[in-house]
Image (cartoon, rainbow, N blue to C red; front, side, top):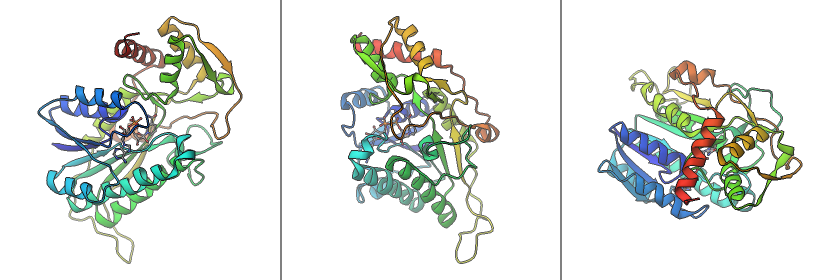
Length: 334
Ligand code: NAD
C-alpha cells in the first residue's frame, strides 16, 4: 500500500514511517522542516528512514500549488496526517503559524484526498480540545466547545473540517486525540526532554502545581500501534454511501474521532521520580504554582478505540521513561 505521512520528520511521524516501512509499505513523507525546534533532530530522524520504499519531499502543507501537485502525481492509497504546528504556549505569540499549518494545511490535505480518491484519512487531533475542568475520564461523547488555546481551537476545527469532507465527499476520516505523547526521539519543547537536559546539566527544573497535576502520558509505540491497527479496520468504499446535498444523507462515509491515551493518569511528581530513577540523578526542583491555562488532570476514555481495533496501551511510564533516557544518552552522547 502507498501511504502519505505528513510531518514525517516529526516525533510521531518518524515513528509511524518507520513502522510502515518495516511492514513493507511504500511511504512518501512530507515536512517543511521548520525551526520550531532543532532542525538537526528532524534531519537525523529522516536519515534513519532511508529506504528504497521511502521518498521525502520538503513541502509546506499550506502551499496551494505543491500540495495538489503532490497528490496528483503520487496517487496515495491512504493518508496519515501528523504535520501541524504543535504546542500551546507558542500559539500565544505566533497565531498565524497555526492558521497556516493547522487550518490551511489541513484543508489542503482534505482537498488532496477528495480529488484523488484516497481510501482513508487518519489525522492527529489532541486532548487539548477538552479544555479546562472536565469530568474524568475525557470522553469523545463530551461536548468540546471551549478551547483554551488557539492550538486547541485549530485541532477542534480539524475534526469539524474532516466531518464535512466525510459527508460531503464520501471521504472516510478518523481523528485521534493524542494525550501527551513521549518516548525516544521525543520533542525538545516537551517536559520529559527539558527535564532530562536540565538534570544532566545540573540545572533545576520548574515543577508546576507542586507536581500535583496528572497527565495521561502515552508512550509513542502505543500511539503508533493504534494508528497501524486502525488501518486494518478501515471501511471499503461503499456504493451506497450517498453524498449529502439538501436533505440529510441516509448513508455517508464514516467519520470517527477517538481518544488515544494510556488510560492511567500519572502525577507529574511520579513522572519525575521515574526520570530520576532512569537517570540516577535527583532533580533540583523549583516548586511552582499552577500556570494559567494548565489543566489539573487529563485522562482518556479509550474504550471506544479498544472496541473498534482491540487497542490497549502496553507501556508503563517507568519503562517508557527509561527507554527515552536510553535514547537521549545515546543520541547526545551523555
Ligand atoms: P512534531 O512537531 O515533532 O512533528 C510535526 C512535524 O510537522 C514537524 O516535523 C514539523 O516540521 C512539521 N510541520 C509543521 N508545520 C508544517 C507545515 N506547515 N508544513 C509541513 N510540515 C510541517 O510534533 P509531534 O509531537 O510529532 O506531533 C504530531 C501530531 O500530533 C501533531 O499534529 C500534533 O499536534 C499532534 N499531537 C501531539 C501530541 C504530543 O504529545 N506529541 C499531543 C497531541 C497531539
